Amino acid sequence: MSIFKRFLLYLAVGVLGLFLASYFLEGVVIQEDIFLFYGGCALGVINFFIRPIIRIITFPLRILTLGLFTFFINVAIIWFTKELFSQIYIDEISTLIYTTIIISALEFVLHNFSK
Image (cartoon, one colour):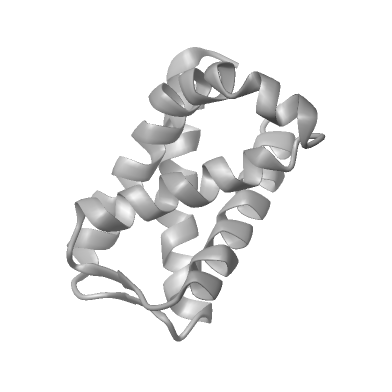
């Protein structure tokens, strides 16, 4: 898969993941639809460009925790995206974790079916 297609896939995962989280979870509120798009695109850009750098830096922690630290990296990325946009509201840490699970599952499915 080309880099451009992978980038578009990350953008789609970000937007669709935030939409699904706001649809299924009561604690996720996105005030306007345009911020769903902006927040999803920001999440996709962060996942495409910054997450690989974070994964390289935290490699020893991921080895020690048998990969569990990757989940906390994903939670931190979604929290950071939420903090970038005040129009995206996630009320509790449990809702943030469920949002991370939804987006991670969607990413897993879309990346495996896109090959």
